[in-house]
Length: 175
Image (cartoon, rainbow, N blue to C red; front, side, top):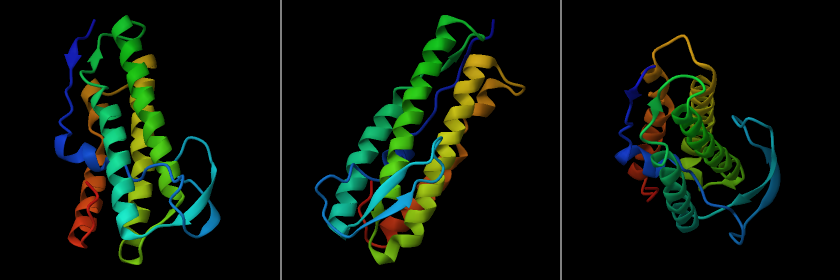
């Protein structure tokens, strides 16, 4: 039986993991796009938003996703099939679903022009984070060839931090 506690230090990153809030009532231009990086492909309605709306949406969904990511910890790996692993896998699944919802919402946003490239990078990074969470969920349920801690690195969070820092430098309040 393995007992590895791998806390994940996300204080400065988690707040900005989430991209946007649900788009109900935001107004703007409509169209259709496909959410990339999700476990399933979803068609979403696109909506152009202004800076204030974009900032508010980023902050709201950031709080939702950060709570979801933070609630995964502590993660214990006590072996495949143990109650601790089942509980951890359920928490990771919940976070993965929340990140997927954020990616789908993000795919529906046409952001202000100065941050459109950053917005696309953020969407791709959320998709990668969702995949990293899916891999961790699988390892908790089935085991894996590498040490448990290797699956908790979440490289996508580093990219998300860089992207949101770039957005902040351009005058957006995204975290």
